Length: 124
Image (tube, rainbow, N blue to C red; front, side, top):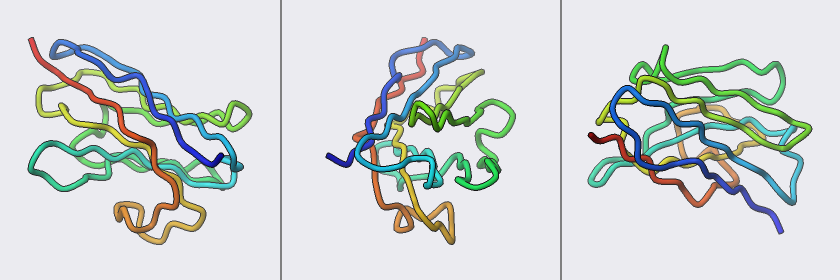
């Protein structure tokens, strides 16, 4: 069965950290570029980070640059998102997504597979 399973969300205080994981099964994740998106109620799904399948190049949205780090372990078919210095505005459902040939990394339409989402709540 082809699927992505994302996990690691939860409740954290402002300034805290979380590490999200995205595990692939049924397809070779190493051949795919992977992005993390997030979506808050009433807002569009926002692309926040990307890691390429070829050279491991990473890209970050300005809203998370310097605080979030994306990485991958192809042997474990897993992509991670380390989130530090979390802010209340980071509260959202976070999704990982995989694309074989992404032309525009911020467009959800470019992605072939999606995780089910994991909730992150940043609150004191």
